Every structure is written in C-alpha cells, then in structure tokens.
Image 1 (cartoon, rainbow, N blue to C red):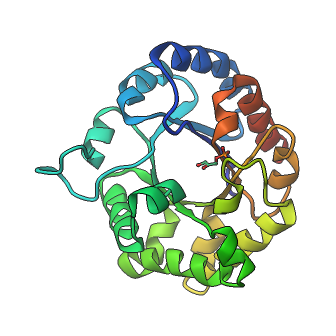
Image 2 (cartoon, helix red, strand yellow):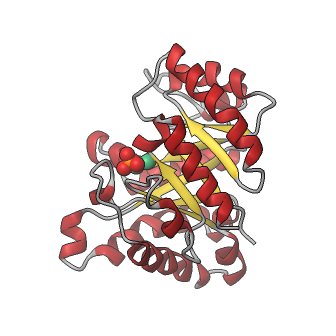
Image 3 (tube, rainbow, N blue to C red):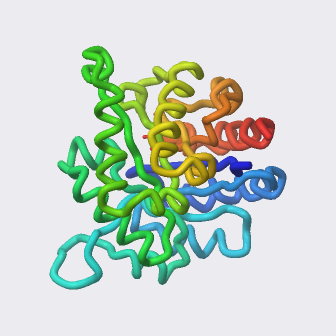
Length: 253
Ligand code: 13P
C-alpha cells in the first residue's frame, strides 16, 4: 500500500513572517492527517527557518532544486550535503519551470536524481508535457523520454526510493487541472513503463499529480487508483486550501 504524500511547492514566495504563520496554521492539520506524509518546499534561503519550525512536527521539508556536484566552484548552487545539514528530506528535481526557464536537460535531471539518492535525499522527479506536445500526440513519448533518462542513469532501483510527480505544463498555475481521468491515464502509463523493468518496484513507486490542485478538485484526483497525492503550487500558500487538500489525501485512504 502506497502512503499518500501531499507536498507544497512554495516556488519563489514567502517571507520570514508569512512562513511562520503558514506553518503555525498547518501544524494541527499534520497531526490530524496522520495517515499521510506532508511536506513543504520553501525557497532555499528559508530552508533553515522552515526546517527549524518543523523540527519535531509531522511536516517534512523539501528543497526546490539542488546541484548535481558535491562541492566547489559552482557559484549560486546548493549541494545535497548542504541540504542534509538542515534535515531536508526531499528535493524537487526537474520541475518544468527549471526545465523551461533555466534550460535543465534530461541528462542534468538524471544526474541530480542520482546525486540526491547517493546523499540520502528523496528526489521528487517532475515530468510532464506541454500543451503542444499533448495536442500533437507526443505526450507519452515526452514522458517516456523524461523517465528513461533516469532509468538509464540510475536503473529501476532508483524508483524504489524516489517519488515521481506528473505535472502537465499546461495545468501549472493556469487554473486548468487535468481531469481525474487524464491524470489517471498518465499515472498508469508511467507505472506500466516502470513495470516493464520491475513490477514490484512499479507497484511501490509514489506518483503525485501536480497542476492547479485545489481544495475543490483534490478529492476526485486522489480517488484515482494511481494518483498517490499531490504536488501543490498556488494552493499550498493558503493554509485553509492546503489543509483541505491534505484532508482529501487522508480521506482517500
Ligand atoms: P500550481 O498548483 O500553482 O498549478 O503549481 C503546480 C506546481 O508547479 C507544483 O510544483
């Protein structure tokens, strides 16, 4: 049985005051939703603050990105060991905004996944197609290529530890969510792809859906058999909305 996971990706939002208020409001929700895992991913600069606030609570902390190198002359980068220094559990890898705006390639994403695993972090491998790719019938090919890059670099064994997040680019920040059926179709496709390598690992891999997840649509999305939780952007900045999404995941048990 896969344990549901709800992650908030705060992106480049937040402040010392706002983070504290949000986490104060979420603390009881995390205690209430004891059957699921909950994590928040603040901007790097707030990781020490958020990690310290969440110490001893049921809320885990993730980073939004990391470097694929150990240390040295990589100005502006943050290493996996630095994240470990602050008790960070998860790291988003290959978010579509990193791929589209900062040109991250499948090869770099695969290297980051491998490095995160080596250092004891749980990578959250983000995959997803653009609207053009979906319309032109290339959706499955695009997602398969993104997944295969990691299979090639790290083998199926990586998928026993990492989390996959399916985030259709056209649904991110647009208010347009994939229907539960559209999400299920792609999640099942990803699981089938992994099952070609190991049915046992594929059955255990957590696959999150991301893209305009809201309090209104979370129940229906999480009711799908291959949707194991959500990677939530905008709604994770509002305590009430994020709480409702966590409760929807708890209710899907
Ligand atoms: P929204 O929930 O704001 O669409 O963002 C999704 C996302 O990119 C999470 O990583």
